[in-house]
Image 1 (tube, rainbow, N blue to C red):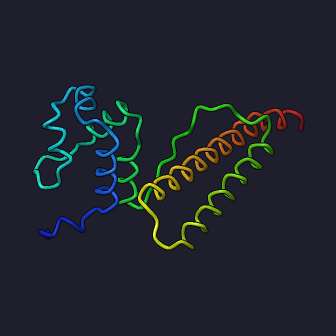
Image 2 (image 1 turned 45 degrees about the horizontal axis):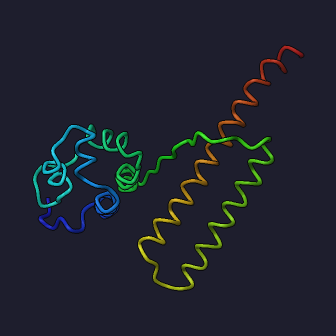
Length: 160
């Protein structure tokens, strides 16, 4: 093992830093039944105590902030998509058109930001958030296509 901890798990470390910046650790700790001192120590990379899987789940449920889970998954080359509980478009074509518009907007923002050169952490986080929302819309579209055509298959088989 290396003693150089600064280069280990950069996505997860960035996610931890972002989470701490975005939330009041005292109120979050109280909501999960942990002292704020212990919670802060778990976020401090110099401390031996680390966040456990149970801690990550409790923090997500307390804050509905997926930042820590996303950072952890990015370290493994994975991502997760939350399936939003939102109103559905009236039809599959409407969903697909809306999704294409969202992806085009993401592409335009990405071009603008890369042409400028350096981007701020807030801009990066905003772009990732918008892209994640679009992936959620894609997950809904996939779900709706599966649901629609699984329901039709047995009926079509009966007609034959």
